[in-house]
Image (cartoon, rainbow, N blue to C red; front, side, top):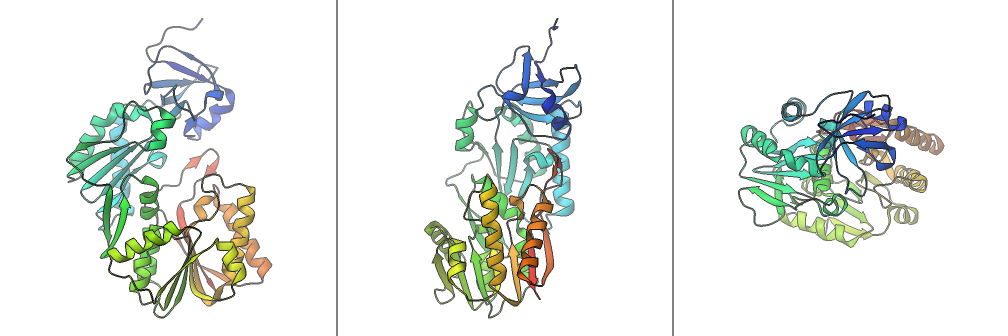
Length: 399
């Protein structure tokens, strides 16, 4: 007979027990045996095995379309305000020790990488954006704001609940200003004297920008770009087109399947007074189609993103990815540099390494690995049996 408990107990199936100890992020409804006790949306619940072993705790949301629980603790730990503060302090300590240097803008908290799943916090100079992906974190907003106010000198704190999260998680209320005031969503981040424009509610784009800061430093400090021909494939704001133009390149080809990329890049270049039609050439095409039809060689090729699906890297995508990589290597001059910013599409780094190795062998090419770039804020974690990538880009040279 089940006894009454103060906090609701979620009894999980055997299939999910081991994954919880490996720091899985979600528990889906079909992996739950039954629930004992009452709870409200956003409450913390205890997770138990069928044998009665305490596994951890998580936020529960019965209205969620995708998952029932976001896990907060693993291996029988409890979550409370003290644990929250410890993890927030640990995240900031890690940033200051390994990543930040003199940057005014950076990611303070990155979801499960800081053991705070469902929470991303970005500092954009004097603005802090708290991105919330589950209703449970709304119960801890006062503590999060207290932490931010005591650690950082910021004028504005904004709660961002993305539109898809509002719909999928049935959040009780939407985005709003928590401190200060804000007049527009577009926000300028300065880096090395260059200006980059963002919608500060776009946590994905901002995350990519912060992750790839070391790539831009590499372009700025380590590569002689004077009079070089550069091909930019599917650029994101993270690639740093202003760096390339300012470095004195001979020609910049920007290849994208979308006209939106052209408009956005022009906006960034105009912001930096670097708009030069003689240097920039836009090409609207899929990357594979263009590279198959053209034979010109480049000194530098940068792959910023992929034409195909971003969320589900399926078998067809893998074939297209292999074809694209082979074509890119074939378009590099001898001594040319290739910067690949897409390794994070793979859940396991060995799959990426093996694919590149197979391409090099089949092409009879000689490739030198020049540099790998660490994420600014990611810590390698064991997650559902795979090691997360701890770098965001790789640079190769044809020799």
